[in-house]
Length: 226
Image (cartoon, rainbow, N blue to C red; front, side, top):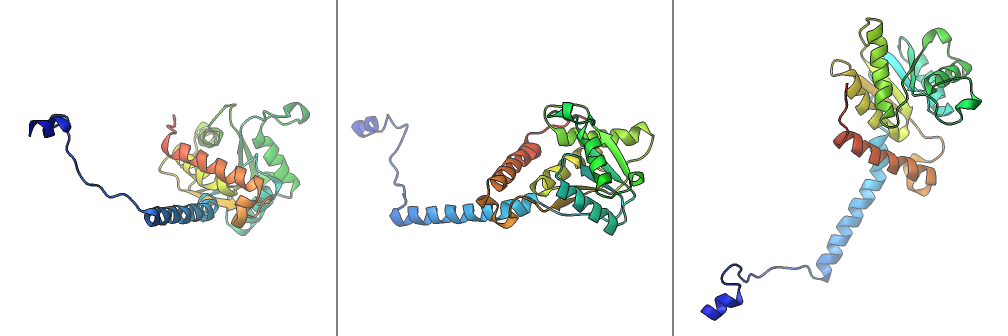
């Protein structure tokens, strides 16, 4: 008896049977993992590029967006009852010496006017220079624009942005504007890749994977300061 106990580390451990997968089990597990990966890949872009607009209120456009997004913003404005278009954006940090505008908010507003939207319907809301969390700071700048004028932030606020950036934009605008403001979002379809086959394009891979990682950060690791 003593020898058996010494063989099992003086009773600190005991021998138990355990089940391990056979080659069929491992093959089945691999198949499940592959099917899960396929589902994630196919649903990643639709999950990120969410559209959930709210009727009325104001339309917010991120000034760094591509021209086709701004064209979609004009169409959205003309087909729904928005009071105004607010263009947000941080200072231009690349090629600023070549343009006369200081921020993406100003540049976006000018581009919208060039595309046919009346300047009376546009309001530029530039944000300060930041190195990270630019979408959040742009949303904070919008809130402070109304606070500086002693005006309540209109509700709802509908944010129109590029495809897979949409879910993160809505999350960060909700954080910045507060729970009393309803935030809707409109995802403009991408113009440089097929959203249903995003993994076949380098632009699609960069956008979707980059936004997926950024959304995980914003959802689980970002602690906003108001």
